[in-house]
Image (cartoon, rainbow, N blue to C red; front, side):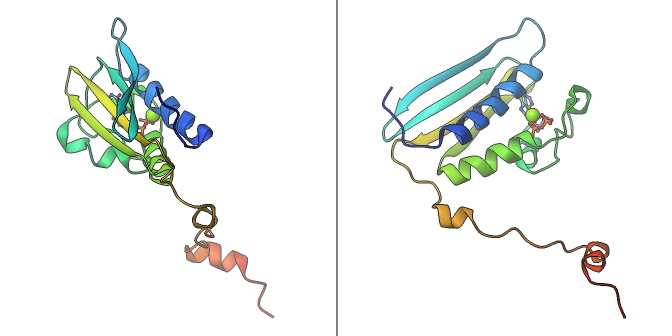
Length: 147
Ligand SMILES: Nc1ncnc2c1ncn2[C@@H]1O[C@H](COP(=O)(O)OP(=O)(O)O)[C@@H](O)[C@H]1O
Ligand SMILES: [Mg+2]
């Protein structure tokens, strides 16, 4: 494999989330396979499982925070639905792309395409301040007492 110019901690976090999902959603006796494949100016990291699979109508929503598979029994597997939201956010920061192929009852393959050369965000973009609280109750609490 060629070396990639990336962020080790973020990339490790992406893989940990994908591998832990693959293990969680694959019943005993199944198989989880992790591969690295050279692709032109990128390395593709694949996490493949022989688990429960993901319905086509769930494939967009599961990347949003706090969303779990609606049709499947994902809720019975625990978790809070943040892993893939984190994967989406971190891969965006890394300039990487996530792909998903799945068949219900057969398994899923998540692919992270990491460019060899760094194409992620600059540090200044990362340092944008977080949005202030918008809920009225929190805003009230933040104000000094009225005199
Ligand atoms: N490898 C997988 N196989 C089947 N379903 C998956 C897999 N990975 C993710 N999912 C689906 O996507 C949902 C969101 O995943 P995630 O954000 O990691 O949340 P959580 O693991 O807390 O449920 C899961 O609840 C599940 O429905
Ligand atoms: Mg998860």
